Length: 408
Image 1: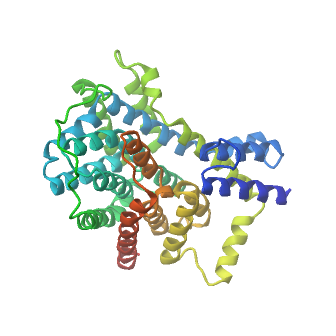
Image 2: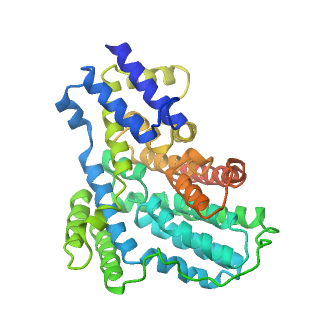
Image 3: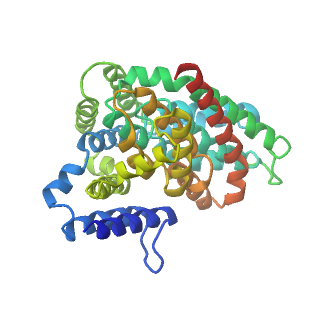
């Protein structure tokens, strides 16, 4: 039975690393779900144990924040924010720094994937209308949303998992992770501004920048509800009330609307991401029945690699995050961390998130920006992304290691 478990685990994680299974029209979510089904169908996990393997507080936190973000998106807040930044699009460097700051801040308090989904088309249209090269600005959006999301427990899915499983305090997490995130954001801006110093302008003639019909108009009332919900959430996160209870309650209040239909709000929930999480929780629980995690830890220690060492943990998380993406990587690595040493969890949050900027498959936010850009007729190649992503990631990781040396 252990052999079968290892085979299912290996196929699942190899499929996630490749992004699909040859011969099948299946993405990473489908692969994770299939792996979970295999764990149950083969009798490796009883159905009740599989259901208990899913960390419901993490799922509820992710689900509730998606509803809050949907409120802001439907209320036109994201589009309005991006268009307000677009008023200075004729000043490329100022536009770049404002866009990166806003996307980083929004990603820190909401799910970064949704920020990228809402911002990408507006930024693309704005910069092309100004006759500028859209690539540095879209890359700036991707890297800044990843970096900004590292600062808080709720900035991205892997941080939510780390915060919930590690039972981390919201305020202490913010105090430890925000400074290296801010420094990394400044470094990222410097890299992009330098790399594209002679190519901000495009050969395309400027045209008038106008809001497209499919972009939601600003509804001040609905947007205000979303902003107030975010402010209330931030305040409550500093209390001892369970985060998932706070988020799901606020989400329920937002759905009590006379104008915004529940179907519209739930239609913006990323069910694929939630399904990916549930599937991976079950697959990881399955592999735990073989004692492989403990055996792997013993092997690493025997090889002179201590996963509890912050520098080693950073290196391992970077490699694994770029092999299978950061969410699956974190799900494996949290099994090795000491719950009494929060610095290990903070370091994993920073390293796995910053590692997402290295190559295109490192984070879902990267893929969203690239796919949305392609829909606007803008092609960002793997090489073009790596040209920015590699130096940005290396600088971010150096900042992280220096921070670990200072505060670890």
